Image 1 (cartoon, helix red, strand yellow):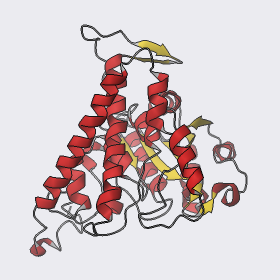
Image 2: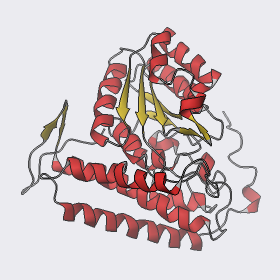
Image 3: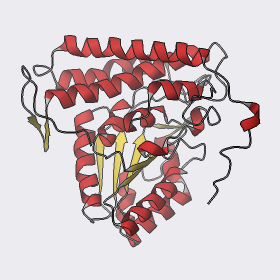
Image 4: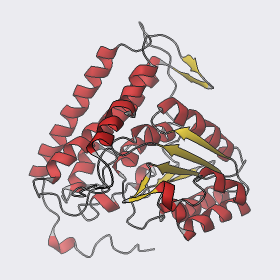
Length: 339
């Protein structure tokens, strides 16, 4: 969780928002994390067109409030499991921008020494179990991490992020059932961006209600606006608090829209240019954050954060391009764990 600090001179003390009490400093930190994700993804959209990035890239822009709202309620020792669209989760959980950029460019200084790339980026030191090319692959991993936390009694919590497409996978249902049976400290977060690759959730989700499935497994669930940081964080605070105190698993279904195609290069013929323009205008988590903090946070401070995020990402790209490639002699390292 973001540390609660006393308000610095000139700052207002924490203000109540629903059940949340957040200081100006905490709000600025949350916006910085969302701004970092946006700047990171927008720059990768440009860099991918150069042909210098190996492998596929799936951008997270438009869903920033979900990753940040949830991860702001987690400790560095808690675990998250991600999807193929994992950059936002990485940054929200504390992975470094430079190390992530090096990984995506396939360089030795990357988080996984340049061997994982975008779709398999991970950092166990901050509890990021990794992006995952297997649709619905995160919930079983997070359920295992939650079982470990319960067995060790360390108060840890695990959170798998899963898309609306992944929500239909059988192994996701198995993980949810096991979490209830064993009363594990896990929060299943379903990011419903309306499209499972190119198939609409309104077609592929038979019940049209991902959160509603939780009732069949015997756990509480809520639906929230995934573009509203405060709505997401409030739901996360309740679910994470329940898990950490021994109350068992929960489900959060957060709805948002991704601003780009399923992957970079996707012609995205399933959405019109007018729809995308409307998403940017009315469903932008950063713009909504600005609206929700009007009168408390000076917009000029948010502008400065946006500029700083772009600068840091620009510097990370320049650094990654100049960084060394992995040594071919290390091709068989980091493949198997030795006990």
